[in-house]
Figure 1: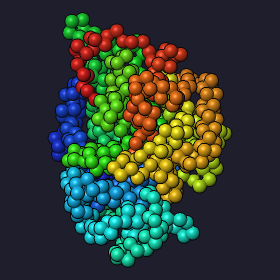
Figure 2: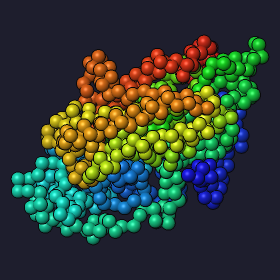
Figure 3: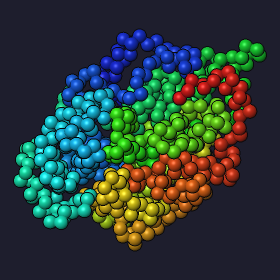
Figure 4: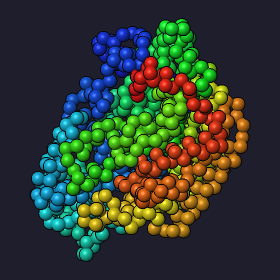
Length: 637
């Protein structure tokens, strides 16, 4: 693939953003500590503005966000890594059309929540819709969008829900769920006694479906609108190549957290200087400026020795980089979003940030997490342990994970890895694609799995790329695939968060619904068919064995080691703490590892590597206390 360095924004747009930076009166160069420089580069609110928001009227901006959420992000919400729809759709492609399985899932979720809000508060459907809109933040016009949608759909929703039909019937009647010829109606809830087809026909007589909804599949791409094309181009570039949306010096590091910014890779401490970024070797021992953004720079006035030399030389400092799928990125949808009993003004406060991070939470992940978890559990990561072991590793992390990622498409985004062979520090690269080579939404799911031969070839291409780009002295950890039978065994007869109130939706129903829509992220494991679940795990074991054999090979820039993604060991650790197995799975999608599972998994990987290959993490830095005493939090994250 063409180098990411060459895939820059259009010249006109790039000049416009440069001009905006100059108007903000930012200095052309930066010196000093990370904290001092970042005060010069104000990043604004944690919740992101929509890119290019100054160029687009409010209503179209809001429409873009709504449509991306309805069509793309609702897909991510339950499809997770589904390759049936393709990695980009699972990640929330902005340029796609409305309609199909993702829209159906989004409709059923929203209608169910409205119905339950009305039930919990003993209110009318109209009042429930107004209450739900009031819970949304005004940021990014979310509340305004909600009110506009309510005006459009509200009258029909009131008629349908007043007639006591469920969300499946409502969405089929509105043509947001569509029955394919010669195929049964897809449904999340148990069908009405009279049958789903009869109920839908009766409901269709109650409402008159607008022409817009009758022809959703013929709508043009929203990105074909002239005033949205630049925004879509920027977001598409970010999603396709896993690089920050705002990166003025094009060094692949950013001063913003969202849209592949420092939630994903270390925060840049000068976004106007491409020789300053996390992970590089110090420049002249960082006497005059903090070239590697670890917060250590300058000269000790007592002995004239540069602090970087005194505290970091010979400590074998190195970064942490993960090449992963959505489990590596930490895909998560808060179950509170569909739990009517718990909804409040705070429930959706993180929605804008969640959308801008593709429904991923890398800042809490088991590989590169650095913030205390706000979504349950706790944060423990390989990066945090590396930083605790050696404070010279501060900010040196990169999470290059992609929703839907697998060995087959890794080469499409591996070039977003930011490491210069001659200039940067060594790195620990963790390859962790734990499911998508055996998970897909195809009807013949076995035929859609990656074969051992293709898997071997895919991994070798990636390793050869890494060997050419990583500094010598690096390490590569290959992590095996998970055994996903754990999902069905511990979830199938439990109630989904959407079914908790009325005890009417189990995970078995959810899995069947997604399979019917042909958007199940893993037809092999999320299946009622035990034989199919066993065959899926058998292929996963075969691919893990391929990784284990590859780990015996030698490369000039790094050594290789193999570790398992051991679900039983994680479950055993959680059992010792008094936990239940089902708490290790994300409740909304019933597929991904939860915050607790990822934290425990990081601990187990750390312990195994430290025991078998202690040289990988390096020795503890005896100067850590001195670093903290002089530099405090080293500029933070």
